[in-house]
Length: 214
Image (cartoon, rainbow, N blue to C red; front, top):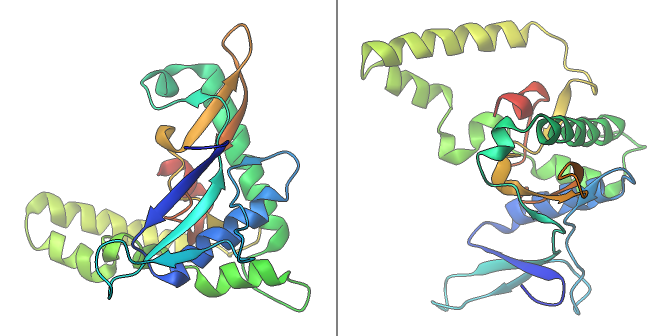
């Protein structure tokens, strides 16, 4: 980390990186959110490519605003009622901003958000297909417990498919807002003032409720 910023270096596709950048920049427009937004580089873009190890192997890098406060990656994040409440408020603000932009593009959709929607994967396309229907079936065949989990997963998927997908309950979500992906600023009584959110690389198109369950 240097000069109030941090570097994100990942061996991901350019499409994945553009999704993360577009989603993050869009959220950063909200005045009530504290997002570690990407910083524009000297070349006028937010994304750089280079090959540190092999000439034929490209890595993508982005420079982000450094999160203020301290890491919340500790057991306290699971038990402190004030921190849990602030986490809930922050997640609600993320969903509120996402809801105003919608999950389906039209003529009024900002170009930045259109880029995010074009690049966004569905939940079953993330984590190398770990929760795709094919993978669930494979797990079901391995054990009785796997079979039981698969049946419950199918029942839940069927239940969710019966609900209408509205801007207020469905859209692009963070999908990984655990205690390791935000910093907190605290007052003199050790109560959280605000949370700084980062690490949007698992963003996906899904129900807002998944952000709570994840």
